[in-house]
Length: 257
Length: 253
Image 1 (spheres, each protein chain N blue to C red):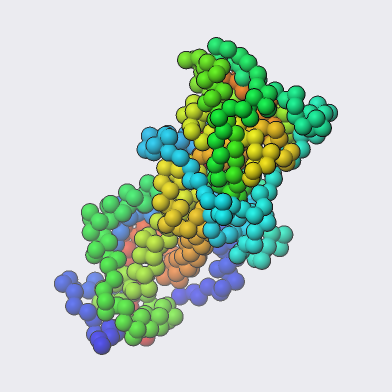
Image 2 (image 1 turned 120 degrees about the vertical axis):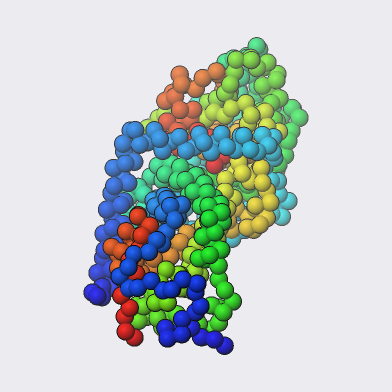
């Protein structure tokens, strides 16, 4: 089993850029989507938490109300049984306004993701940067990448612009699993869509199951957001944020292990 | 490189979230912003109506799939002297008046509604709050009443005026467009789970409009009015919850 180490760079057509030099990292489509999506995600999480506060229990199956046994209660996590105001949009109880936020930004989220997916396939960003190679999933390689992360070394000096495997797995998980799951289960909670596309109810196991899966997807996205922000801060927030605005990223100086 | 402590990181994230939320609160009160935000529901309605079958039926379930208990919500008892007097006599004098833009305004007793062709359907009721309950509803199609009254070509909406009062004495009302009014599953329910409708569920008659959320399903219906425009009625937004709390008029989302 071949294990990539810093001493044995994988073959790459271009020579590795030197530490301190600027490289083009993010395409315009990626940058536009990133910031659109960032706003949409924050609004969707905040307004979604407020909507959950209206009936803070989750069930499996077609139906579920106060006489049924929920598998999850907000009261198990937060005293008072409501998600606190610093996490919700708006911050004080208002289901109607939260729905307005949620339904508007649902369209932003879904159409932006669709556009980004088309752009990512056309400009080959997905195939080039996010495609996971079999060797990268080898346990030794994964373990190596975890150790590198723990040592706060996030870039392979041989290919500093490339994503590491943990990055790839989390981006692929968010873009192709969690976000589409959130969007589709969200649609499955709409009674109008239920009538038009009853197969979606079957796919997710009923409306209350869709509601539960919607929550689980949103928690996965929230967890991604927290780790993502923490890693941006640890990797150098100025360079990282600038690269997502201008597209240009400074290759870090190589750290000695 | 500075290593951030977990406490500082967490504190920063919490402060950031707090700042975002208060910013969103300010935006949510801004009239211009709200007018844009509220367009979202129109776009959902337009997209649904454009891309989906307008006559698509809501799913109907088998008896064994029903909720063991169908909870009540909203007004559980109008509790006005008039209503209580009606309830005491089993609603024998209750009338559902059909008027507005119709050729033959008329009223129907509960006995007359029961003698019309009935539709029974086991459907899922979805509250805007998030819960769902499955029950069996039975009653005549709204279309039967509208056809009997002769709907005018100018009518665009059907308004349901109710006997219950809400939020400091405001009359409950709701409205739907003609797509939903003539939908095969849109009925005036007289029965739930093979029994006459109880007071908690809207006795003696409530609307079922199966492709929309629960607040559209007006209870204690006294009057059905065909109109061309919703603006002159009460708060002008087509329903009590729409008027007082800005819920979406189209609740198929």
